[in-house]
Image (cartoon, rainbow, N blue to C red; front, side):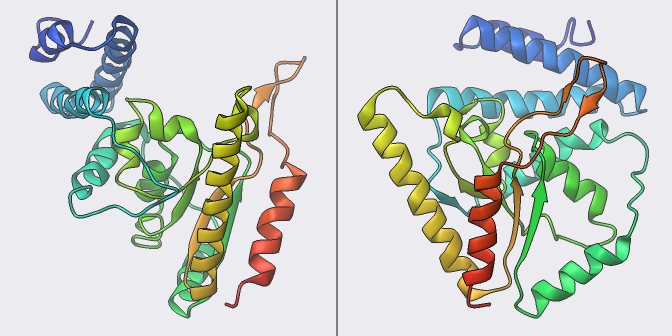
Length: 250
């Protein structure tokens, strides 16, 4: 157990958060510190990162940050942007190879000229914005720092993910599979999603906006032969973003 006899372990044990969250964080911290050490990161440095993350998790638990439909980080949120990079950096093994670098450079040129760009992914993990920044900044500096990520409920409500999400530009939505049986909640969530789409359209009309959206809406899962299959794009999501792109003034 890499966190054994550490201040972090004592802090987790004495924290006023739920038992399952303590267990989940400790499991993550142990894996994280061990992987960091395997990547030649100093153990104390990795523990410091986990302590900083845990402080943010505690704060999110006791005083949850409520994300609006459009989230643009404030100056106060900049520390969460940096924390996200610190958390993700040891998880990116070796130096990523970016093929077709000219495409990213062209994207940056288009944005500088006031054009809009939409990246379509099959799915998105919680740390994807941070990993994209780490992997691609050497090719297109701050491209993904300035990108709006379409974020589902989990990355804005999970106490381990929400602090890192605060450091990123987000369009916040409720996925269709999370529509509630409660009619009023369902109405509220649909109205929230409509507001988000309206804000997307307003920003696209101004131009120079980059959006990253997971059009698959799920995870890549193995088939019967144990081969991982890419999640197919959801046709309705493709149609929505095609319409947004085609009707934007820029």
